[in-house]
Amino acid sequence: MSYLPEQVAEVCRVWGAKLWLPMGIDGPRLLWALSGCESSFGANCTPRHEQAYCTGRYSQNPRVVELTREFGHDAHCSFGPWQILLVNCSPFTTPEDFVRLGRCAMETASFLNTRILRGQHAPTVEAIADAYNSGDWRDRLVPDRYIADCRRYYDTTAMPA
Image 1: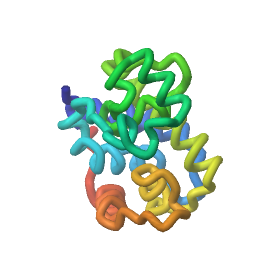
Image 2: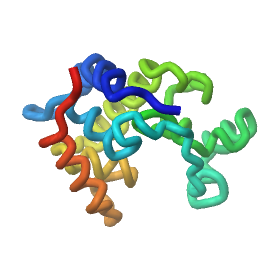
Image 3: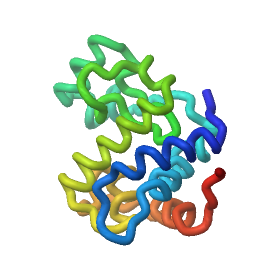
Image 4: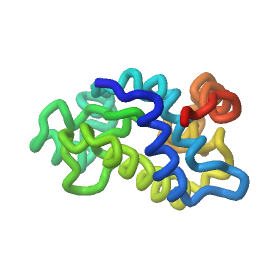
């Protein structure tokens, strides 16, 4: 599954404007940059099975267990241009919901707002990228390349009209 960069940019503009960001961070550009890291700006949106949620360290999370009963291995997948995990989405979200690009963007924006921006108070593009990739920007797990790629996409990769 894939989307055109123009389609991804369009929903980035809509949902990026709804992010509760610190001053100086542009929401649409941030969503655009994260989509670059996660799916090459929509080119590779095939659901990605995340082993840590299947048999790894997150597999016993009560919400993951519940989703696994309902959706099988789809509960362990990330979806769409932002490769958002089903477990990080609002209740009643199903894997089928991710065929709608706007729904995927809405779930991503909601996750960023509640867990990373309000919950962790991530202050910079780098901190937001770190938290989005590793779970918490304040821990010792620092995905340096991911953070650098996100910053580069944010600064230099133009969003199509």
